[in-house]
Image 1 (cartoon, helix red, strand yellow):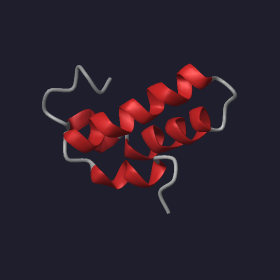
Image 2 (image 1 turned 120 degrees about the vertical axis):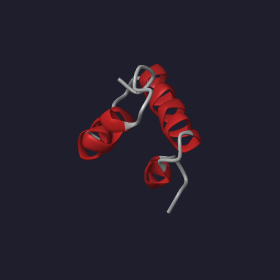
Image 3 (image 1 turned 180 degrees about the vertical axis):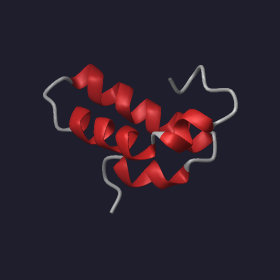
Image 4 (image 1 turned 120 degrees about the horizontal axis):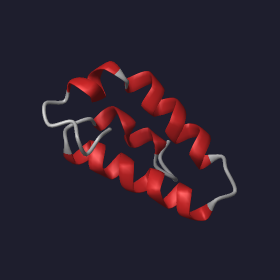
Length: 60
């Protein structure tokens, strides 16, 4: 969804759901999934969606 969204419309329309998914994944016991969620937050940040940076481990 993020990679294929070339114009940013999908991200804008799904911000709340993206945040919920990342939160859920970070609470899981799956290390690979948590690492993928961190990578996703970084990708979103690189695209200019900085409001997700608080989802990174250690951010307060």
